[in-house]
Image (cartoon, rainbow, N blue to C red; front, side):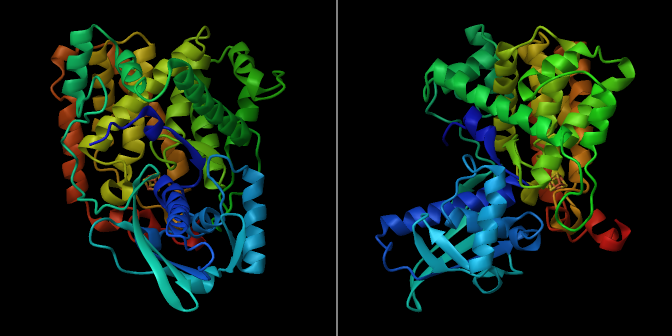
Length: 473
Ligand code: SF4
């Protein structure tokens, strides 16, 4: 298999879901590219899309329909500005047209051209098929699978972890044991191993630029969430909470924008009882932005996008006021490396593994990053990741009405707090005493995913989604 890059695990994108928004968006972009490659540019007169399985059951709440229209319309989830999204959707909705590649107008009405099929495709719960027509005759048909974290594939996913170590980097690993062996043989940290592997694809300067861009999106999303009031879209009437929480914490401390905000927070001398409030505030803020189709970093998914930034903020504003980009880089390199072990050995798709695959994995990634920048050894980093996941095993995915709001937004603050605790325990422990390895917990997570009732895997047909109706919210 190919090496899973840091920038595969941490991607800039648009909320609310990596598998149900970003993946379908990317699929639509790939389909329009396929039409160009087949030279169908002038012939195509109609496109229809069929959503299967979890994409169909929770697609409306996860904005899958909107993502597909934006992808077909030539918009890119990395470069689109949040205020362009509503305007573009309004235009498409109002005119019932899509501007393919931004240049060719064809009719597209989600009511008649987008089909929410109740069936599941055989290979993966997140399947979608695009069909292009010319004068009533089908030109081409392509099926994609959105396999979690914004990754898409056209190959038939086996639903089994790939146990072959990637070959295209100097220090390939498929699990914690192999990663640790590289660290020991090279006398290197996990961040140094990640950097050496990443250097196959980019120069050091490019890598740093990309990580800085990721950090800035995290920071800006946190800032936006802390400065936005009101009700989240979708119909559940969920009130944004980060704004009030932030106001109560920042008080009258002056700052001018996201750039000097962290310095301002540092100057407030956070009191002990405010620490958890700050962590929760950042986690909530990012997932409120995510829930309103804002720009966030998929880490490793959009539903769990708040965990890693919340723990990183904790490190920057509570733990180490001297930390700057160097520590941020190390934190994110280590987090992404641990995430790739979960992707290889288990899954980061809630449709396959429930919420343990989202919040559980993000907590493990965050715990690992925090342990590394706090001076932990590679063994302690793996131990922190193991502890964080161990206490998320079996967590189900049951979002009310398919919206990434309840329990998702609050769940990010819980994941962040568990991650900090996991790092604290690991930093104070001798990993030789650990009874459970990271690899054992990854395997257990996957086996738990296989055993989990399908209703609890992002279908909104069980759990809170079933027992709490709209009138209860
Ligand atoms: S319950 Fe967890 S896995 Fe499911 S949508 Fe929400 S955050 Fe994602």
